[in-house]
Image (cartoon, rainbow, N blue to C red; front, side, top):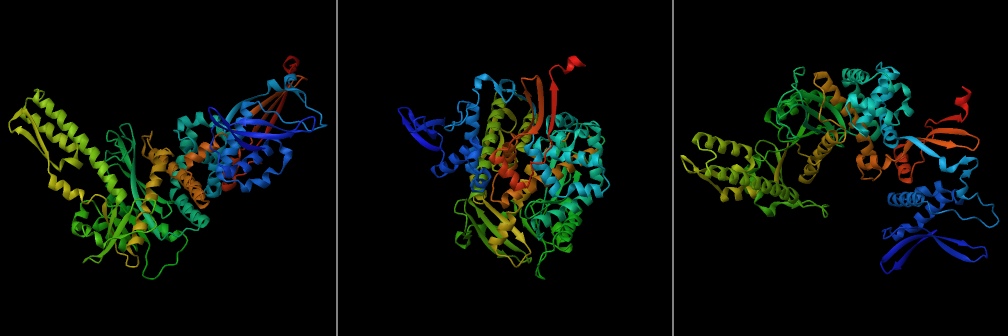
Length: 631
């Protein structure tokens, strides 16, 4: 088989052709499938054509021998084109000269099976579950839970709870309805369908009681599996909201919600990551917990993360480095870190950068970081302070554009709100002077980012109907806007240059990526529970799912694959279990329960994650048409 581009009056058409000889021995060609204007690269056409030919004619070559030569892009085209040929149903194999042809399709019987009555039913997604289970087992969780005293049913329930968070995050009540629609009963047995949703509450309670031992095991297992050295630790916080009055949860408080759900109660989650983004420890705090106060509680977890991980080779003057954001970096916290045996690297607050306005203005003193040709430029400058700290002044074109866009949007919303209030005052919508001043105060409070650049008052001091006077202070705005894109890093480390310190601080994005996955892909929010232990258990199950998620993502990155779990899950979800029903002329009906054949892209992922498909359970039942009459 080979590809050819056919030019027609309406455009070019890519066709897959098949060469053969007719009854007279003359060479001929026929179209296998027309692909329209598909942009299949010329460099892949020979490989794709050969692979599809071997799929259509299984005896025509060693398919497995060629698979290692296929790139991810080639596998994508092989699967899509093969699926299209089968779906169209217009192609039929060639008959070799002298061979006995198979019965025509319209006879409807193939080796005694009535072809037109072959059906499949009860299809359930298998692929994502296989990979999630592989991660759970690679992290050694089944054996650990066994050692911790959990019986087989409890271990399976724990695995099902975590796998669900990776495949389709649901509450415990909805989980019971989801399990039969998945391939989990085939993998773990029909027993997982028993017990009701209380079973999953009980197992989450058990896991929560053993949290410290489980997290210690995972710290060690991750470090050994990927060869990680915990010389750099990242600490950050997020929050998760839930509805209800929270009377049974003393941690349920109203606080500054990062999801903009100030109308809901919430709890705060503090989490320690290593430099690759693996979770090392976490703690749940009250919803109004400040970022700064949480660090003192987490110092013991930071020490355990370093103590239990693979021991790095450090110079005597070096200590593990903790990277935190400005909200955590109080003078007290930095002192606590130093006393606990850590160095620190922190991002100063936006207010703090004003101290360095004169130094930021000295453009010629900054050095542009190399190796960022395809990314926004970043320039750095290293300074020593009288307090013994080292300061890295950073100027980022990307951050400057982001700050300008944020401010521009905030200013538009502020001006629109001022115009709306001005109009309402002028038409007499607010006649009382006190209420008018109150409305102005509330409006300013809702726009803290912008209102500091504006002078706002009534046109006439005691006349609400005079409307509003508002004007931007241009000199103050210019002073601030000159620092857009500028930020300050502070550290006590003396052995690293400005570029190295900047790159280390960028590691904090690993923590941000982790929180994003927890909240969006793994179902951390919203939280549907009210009791304290239920909320904590919900968070812990999500954290366990994050460990498997991170194992998958890191395995992909080590293989040079930049896909995320959402993309991988989408590729794998079409690999299913199904029951195939075969009716024969003799009146028998065969019910075959088995997994489908994995596509090439799915096989590639299974090999990467070391998933074995061959040993999956299969079953067969035979029913005779007159069996019911005999009974």
